[in-house]
Image 1 (cartoon, protein in one colour):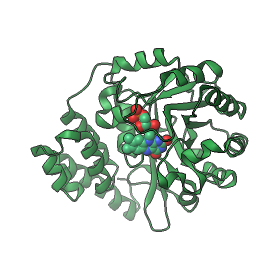
Image 2 (cartoon, protein in one colour; image 1 turned 90 degrees about the vertical axis):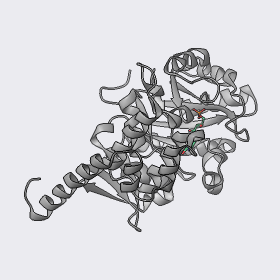
Image 3 (tube, helix red, strand yellow; image 1 turned 45 degrees about the vertical axis):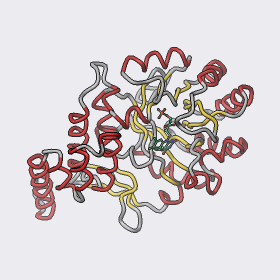
Image 4 (cartoon, helix red, strand yellow; image 1 turned 30 degrees about the vertical axis):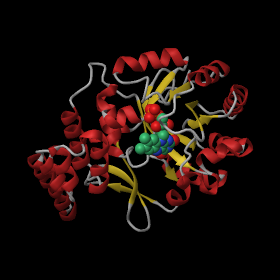
Length: 339
Ligand code: FNR
């Protein structure tokens, strides 16, 4: 049993880590709709190590700010206890520096061992780690010993069942709290069929929770499919990436919501937490998918600022009211009084 307050990865449904998509508004949206745990986008250790932790009293967030003033990671009270910080790393020492930096503000730390994209594999990170199990072990042991929150990792499968099973068993030995298994080989694309048998073998070979991943295209279209995926994979938990990116209400036990509603709910979080307009637009376009050329899609595509995006979705009033509230807080902070 996990100690009280410590995030458990048993029998959970999670929002998967997704570069650009897994920023604060999407994580809050997934939580609203019923996700138990939300992973942030992969953040690279070298960049994070240069960040400063800043308490943002106006937004009521904690921000990790890069030297060029970019906010690399923003979190808030609402997701405390449920947000997993995913790190890209190939260096145990540096991983620990970053883990200690974010430890007070996140519920767990995950190491990306499955991303085949170049920005991740360069320097031996992401899926490159899969061919260096000694490095995997060194990183995970260092983190498990060095911080008090749970450590997890996310892998892809290896070419044979035996190799995959050996790897997850070796990972379990490091003391991690769970392992997410994306049931595809390093060189397979997201459209390739999932190897459910590999996830089953992994789940049967270890006693820590295995989190099944990779089912968005064929297996998980609605909320009830999540339970089927859990059962057929034999895994304790399920993690969704694309299904959630397309329509995060897949997490809703009460059934899916229309895309327009989901986009509005998303945008309200983006406005409330001052999300970067480019990022907001990117996420909305991912949701629109084949509707990106529809009248609504065109309006979103033409928008350049948060105000314009709000107008495209008919949320200009919400946008203005939120700006007024935030400005009042800024003014109060400057005058030293209460908002
Ligand atoms: C991803 N994926 C991913 N994986 C990871 O470990 N860290 C990351 O930052 C990202 N980034 C990312 C961005 C986007 C836009 C997508 C679609 C995917 C992979 C993702 O977490 C997941 O493993 C795969 O998408 C398979 O799961 P689904 O989509 O079938 O649920």
